[in-house]
Image (tube, rainbow, N blue to C red):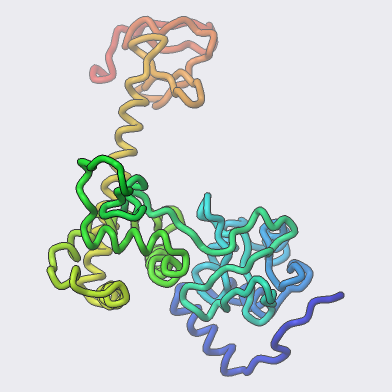
Length: 338
């Protein structure tokens, strides 16, 4: 049986409003045309619930003439008009849907994409095990698993010896509760990831990294420094967090977290480069890429020169590889001498 749209007509003003909204979110005109096709529906690439599953992404990309499948997914994500289904483990999109087409199943209800943190539909593809019933993110380092609440304060079970681990602060406990409650995670934490990803053109995993830094290094210290936070109810704390993130100070904390993430990523990159340059298993005058197994040395004229696998070790810093004779030739000149 052919699938039909839930809404058979849409007003001109509604389409115009949506197009203007997409433009404000940085979507260009050629992409808007393609997004309209997806939003109004291409049934040939949907499943029985009106969902575009992962197995059809490649064909959709070809049909709509996107350069890459990732470009298609980026456009769908940035316009914020589609419902998204995320893979819990890999934090990647495994399906999406238009609110004009998605059919909720009675036993597995889902939210429409108009909600800022939509719940994902279950049984979205031919293989139900491949999908998750909600959007989950592991905000690492917020709260150690061994300190989870198990009936006693600071996670101590009755009858067990006293722990030396300090009890979590009110803010730490608050974010742990958000992170371990799927409904609250979708309603409170996921919108923060959405905004970081869309406003800064980050990938989903990178936005998640930024959220981890924002929570652990900025939000937890901020809330713990205010004695009023511990006196608030859990609902009151959620409202406080949501209001804070709308203020200039909240935006400033986010920017500081993003700057720190950039700094940490640069440090990691420099460390990888340093380790790469220190890896000289064949000769002290050459390097080897441990991942690709390629030997090379630096030449002032030719730059990075690859060394054949069967070549003998580079004998000196002044030696160059002669491609024609297949041997090392010592020029006697260091790069600084040239």
